[in-house]
Length: 154
Length: 125
Image 1 (cartoon, rainbow over the protein chains, first blue to last red):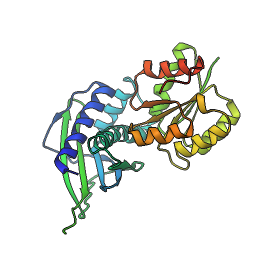
Image 2: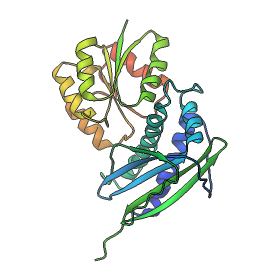
Image 3: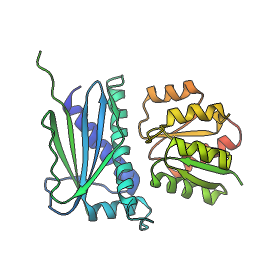
Image 4: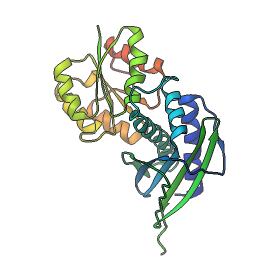
């Protein structure tokens, strides 16, 4: 699988789903902050293994999930995590659909999302080649860390 | 009133289905967060339509569909997935599932599926 093509598919899937869900047109960006953050991790299985990390600060997550909820506050604050997980699941699902269509096979398959939150979240997966994308909107900034297994040397 | 049961671990999807169908006269009776709970709710409510997510904890959508088919629900299920690949659709089709929607869906798409099921037209995918 060509990594650059795959990363572009995740990029376009994020932009499409955020537009479809909350009519937000995110722009690519290049900065971060140190507020309390939420991270959704989705494992990728299939021919190519890896993981996607969607990350943002809690205020951005709150604004985004309220927009998903047609502008209404969520019934239970804990739902924020589930809404964010669903958002990640949707754009990763769209991306894997594109990947499977592009490579005409079952190249990628998603594992259920895992949710983390806290200050100074640092996640590293040394066995993966990863690339981080940044997207900004007036709602806030999202980062997507896309990592795939390193190619084995022949 | 037509009863709809949502089997999905996402409260967002439950609310989206409720917002799509309730104004049109459907009664969205409950939300099961996995297939196992869903099967218990099917016995409790005897729904006319079931929306079924593919990826769920405890019992996933494909396994749940197998159990629902034994109960005669094959033409009453709308399968929902964020992954719209052909392999998954083929697997669900081979079980006898006839209706599919990719997430996210628009309210009118969900309504159209519900109306097709209600009218007994099992040909749409």
